[in-house]
Image (cartoon, rainbow, N blue to C red; front, side):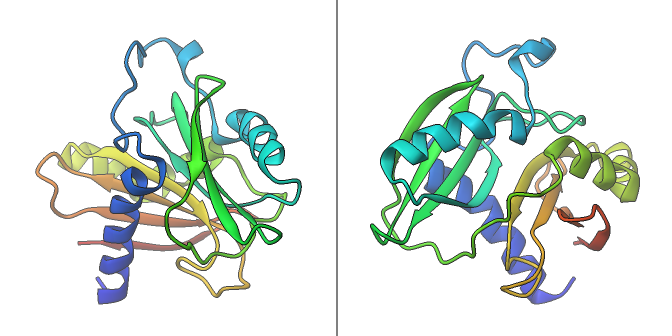
Length: 196
């Protein structure tokens, strides 16, 4: 695996707890992963996050999101974390949505350079379906890996002005040999995959 890809996957793995402060992809208390009413896609949580961000600053723009709780293979999670940027305030704000309600929001204590996400992007359920069909399912069955992260952003594995991408990361129980599958979030095409 290219060294840059390894570094990027490590960064993705470490960003969640830093940005959201909710402990990464652990299951939130009281959430039954078998009860689908507790789970939702990223787009289902987005309106709640956007309302909170707009109340903070009227020019708030979404620049990054990822699961903030355990994912299932349908691309659903109980909690999603969203990062917004305001040019007027020259600051960033994270909003965590858990089961359709704001669970946490607050300023990001450091700058997070990232271009604004466009309004049109495929939802997490479609992105993870593509990742599963592109080797993720086989990797899970072979290694016992779980879906660890689903990250939407721009400039991660593409040019700064390139299309938004979903980066789907699978992690085996022993934490070694992760698989990252990068999906073009604009058209659903497979961009790359890294294993190692």
